[in-house]
View 1 (spheres, rainbow, N blue to C red):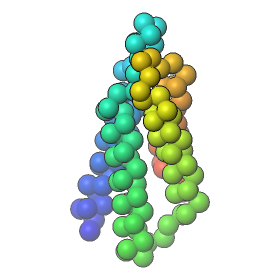
View 2 (cartoon, helix red, strand yellow):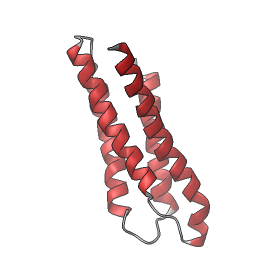
View 3 (cartoon, helix red, strand yellow):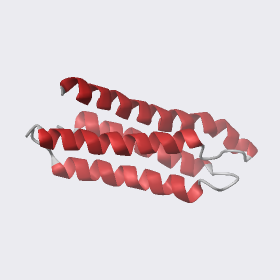
View 4 (cartoon, rainbow, N blue to C red):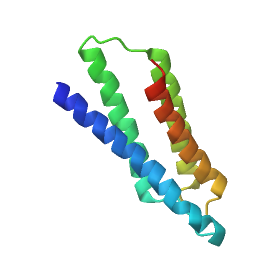
Length: 117
């Protein structure tokens, strides 16, 4: 089971990298008015959501302690990111504020995971 958890953690980090990297890659396009919410960002958010749910579920299955408040806060941050992406997904141009918010919230989610013990 440790191998499965390890794979899920790696996939969770890959999802974060996809979201953060895509947001940073789109920032130069903001000046030209060509920044968009790409499929890579949306798929990264989906990956983070699914692997996060599976990681929490695996903790419950193994009777490991789960900080439900921490998980709730992290889930709320992720849901805000998903909503921002969904609202702006079909727009022809996205503002730098939206991209910055998504990137900042993804860093906040990592900070919560690492620093909140």
